[in-house]
Amino acid sequence: MAEAWQKREFEQQELLEGIMRDALRLIEDGDHDMFFLALGAEMIGIFIDERFAQRGEGTSTYLIGDKLIASYCNRLKARVKDFCRTPEEEHELLARLLTKFTEAGLSDIHSAYLRQTVHEQEKLYEGHSAMDEVSIP
Image 1 (tube, rainbow, N blue to C red):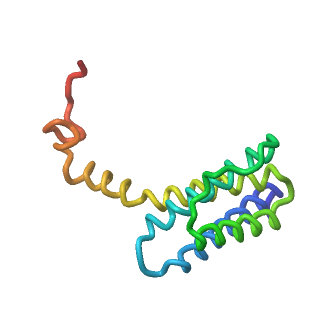
Image 2 (cartoon, rainbow, N blue to C red; image 1 turned 120 degrees about the vertical axis):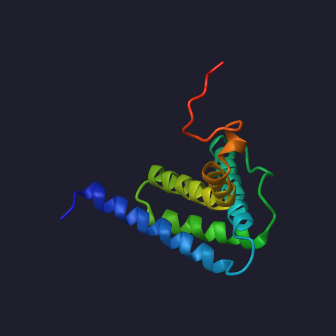
């Protein structure tokens, strides 16, 4: 047994993970980082268009032109909308997807930095290791 919020949180997580698995299947070989960044950019475009529409200003011209990405984003948005019980839940899950897409697209940057913090500390800490005591100007 679980509380209702816990159950829903689990369902939300399953949906988002399923979407991420589907996205990975779209690009088996190639530049995953750029693919996820492009998905993130498309999601941002969707958010921008929705904001314009909410304000009665029509649509924006900010959408990325890639048809595969646009088609996939429209399908995932519909999938999330069908799943959600309220518009607020839909917006929250779309925002979480944007975060996941962006994180996946930037993972190589984070990994390189983390490797450097472990193996090349002197470059980051001006000739010191991370645990050395240094004076603060």
